[in-house]
Amino acid sequence: MRSQNISTKENSKLSSEIDKLRVPKHIAIIMDGNGRWAIKKGFPRTFGHNKGVSVLKEIIKVSKDIGCKTLTAYAFSTENWSRPAKEVDFLIDLFEKVINKEIEQIHKNLIRINFIGDLTPFPEGLKLIINSAESLTKNNKDFTLNICINYGGRQEIVKVAKKIALMYFAGEIKPDDINEQLFQSELLLKGSNDPELLIRTSGEKRISNFLLWQLAYSEIYVTDVMWPDFDKIEFFKAIIDYQSRDRRFGGI
Ligand code: IPE
Ligand code: IPE
Ligand code: MG
Image (cartoon, rainbow, N blue to C red; front, side, top):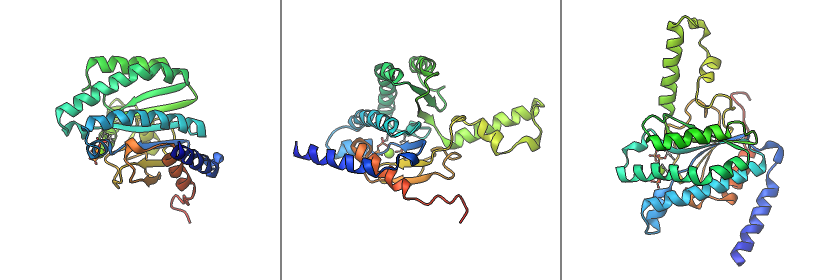
């Protein structure tokens, strides 16, 4: 009870430090550290993935409450297929279960959900659920949640290059029409501004093939906290840190 009081206090203190007018509109998160968190507690890695889902739920809610409009979360990379089949299967199963369980609430909260990445290798069942979740929520305007699965930044860029080559061969564009705007318009996150803030948990100081194009000028916040331990307080700390940054974009 006492520790709950302390965290409630810290919570409202941090929340009052946030400048509501300068909350990032788009936040990207590399939710890392699930496995190590679980192992440290003497549980299988999958326990950490389960806990990670409830953390994501909380962070979606808090993001929306403070006025952020888009959250892009990295849930499965193109490199994550190299993990033991048992863990990959668990994750695929978890995606399916979580979408089924949460989609009604997501829709009720006027959240649009998109799944970003190459969905082809996933089982038909998951693809169907994703399809219906996306079409159910496609007109929701309060908040956009992008879940990146089988996502790789390099893969995304190569796909755009291929698409542009095909446009050229179809006579739709000339080489001089190829510019940043055209490239951007073919990326998977088209329509949303680039993330102002990237949060990575678990202390790793790398991007791990996430949003290579879109993160060009994002502020990067790394915390040692493992994703399953991340919460509202840690999230507020990231926002406050972001608000202390001097974003120069190459200027002076
Ligand atoms: C992030 O946690 C979730 C996924 C990549 C699916 P990890 O599973 O990478 O956990 P660690 O980094 O090994 O602790
Ligand atoms: C990045 O985490 C991918 C996701 C969080 C989905 P990883 O755990 O796969 O990254 P590395 O292997 O530490 O770079
Ligand atoms: Mg990891």
